[in-house]
Length: 413
Image 1 (spheres, one colour):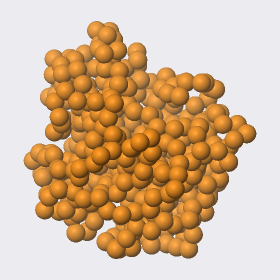
Image 2: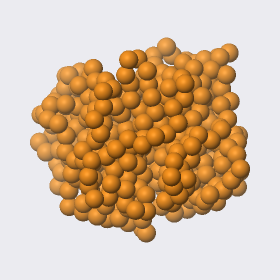
Image 3: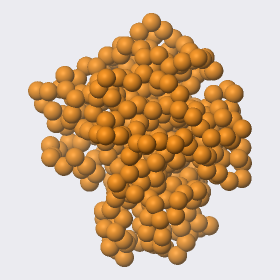
């Protein structure tokens, strides 16, 4: 699916630093109320809603998949700071409802991606952390709304995590991520598994980085045509991160040469295909060498468009935008990207559209009243089939209650 692993090895600022955000809130202009979203572009208008969560515990939705206007799934996690537990929610056409997740002894359980089988069952991927070891995780949730269950999948000796999933059919699908460390700059290799309708089996994949190679997202067009994106680093220059694009031709995965518009980093977080030989990959770039592992104020969003092997690099029209974390190709001249922007130390959600000529901003209602909105960001994006509306998910925080809460945004068309 098009949902992405936003900021590998990092967590949204609001999940750990809301008190600092609150101190800045007085200097931030009041956001429009939930019924007062003023159009700032010519594209879609997005309306938001808070999702079910445990009161007082920070949470974020990281990925979303839609089967119809009355059936969608979103996954993420809630965290106390020291531990986290998986969060799964389902849209029934009127409201989001929490779904029971499997019990776990792990101190950290995080879901990064989700897609839906033709049967209506949802499959979520992510990782667990216990006793200092991170392990890839796959869960399946029944269409009838019952509790989820863990299903077997490849577990590398070095551990690892799944970051993205795309199910082409009931008997064909892909999950991507990395084996090894989740921490930027530490050793890791690409990890890919394929679903055959019965089991997940690991498939060999290139890992070009001599230090680390990671995959964040995957999109499948046909049984012999799929794309996966991520990033890699070499040991000779560990601070430089390059874009990674892999293609499946029905026989093997191979690396495809891709642009690196960032002088220091070009990190890809999401991918979606328009059709055979034509796709979009989005993420961020960094042009300044820094020891800061989380240099949000130095990042710039980037969208890479490829058709027939030729590439085009597109940039946000917003000077404050920092990352694109999701992309949906509704059509060749209708592509939506999502992420967040940073102004005065405050993250706020950002959605833009490609109309065939330029990226233009959409109008977003932050879902708050009284001007108490202090932060938000988007991590996942998906479209309802057959020209339906779009979903974006992430987190939003208000002065009251002072905790990042899982939020979803839905487009007006």
